[in-house]
Image 1 (spheres, helix red, strand yellow):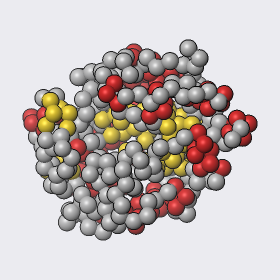
Image 2 (tube, one colour):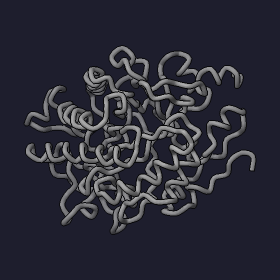
Image 3 (cartoon, helix red, strand yellow):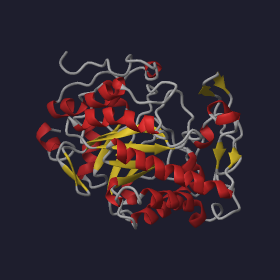
Image 4 (cartoon, one colour):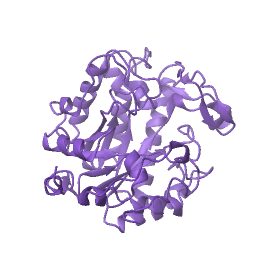
Length: 368
């Protein structure tokens, strides 16, 4: 496929609900753990994001909305004024390159550990169902996952408030919008899926009840940002964090249909099967299936190459394509796509979380 053909698709401009993007390449959220123990963004993070700002849109790594939401070593937060202030240098570095920047709102739910929590409390979830993976990296070393405690019904409005306040801080820091992370087996996904939600209150049972928590969060965030500056991320096929429900197709089509009424900026869907695994509970869901129920922009994510991304856009199955691992190793990914240059080899995951510049800002651009 020629570069000229590609320039009319993957590399062509796109209007994201009034936000002009210079191309359809999206930097997907990538947890990298460079914010230190205090979870405060820094100059190294600003350099990292600025290096990759030739993409059309950057979505930040997962950013925790509260202390309770923490579950990853050295990941950044946005639950204090100091954190919000520190994000400004990162946003300014990206905006200096003319690139829109969304912040991803994150609560890790049951994939956390008591050593991350205040007063050693258990992590929270929809229900007290343990994640079956082997272990988790914690402040006290590798530890087995714990059985979480179910959020009490009267605690849920407090978490909704945390999301709204995090969105307010993101707006203060200068972000163009926010993405609500409702995938990958984190807290919101745990409420959506029947595998992890065995509640008997108004947040459990039927689809309407399981969706209620996400719906309340969306409506809270919409008091801060307009709908066209809010996105939601779902992962209907993924086994990541021990997920996968027999009614996954019914669940996620319902969720997308409900979200459609708000006129959101986009729906991000992880449809790739290789990196995140597939639960084998039916035919995998592709982005084309969501076109019938969601009329806004769709960002496809997972295992895409330049060629398959172009094909998805040409077929109308996606408007934008999120790239993760390739953009870690190729800060100039867009330029490589545009010029037909070879990509750097994918980085060894062992250096992704070095807590320093190694495996972070030290990847060469082409040619070098």
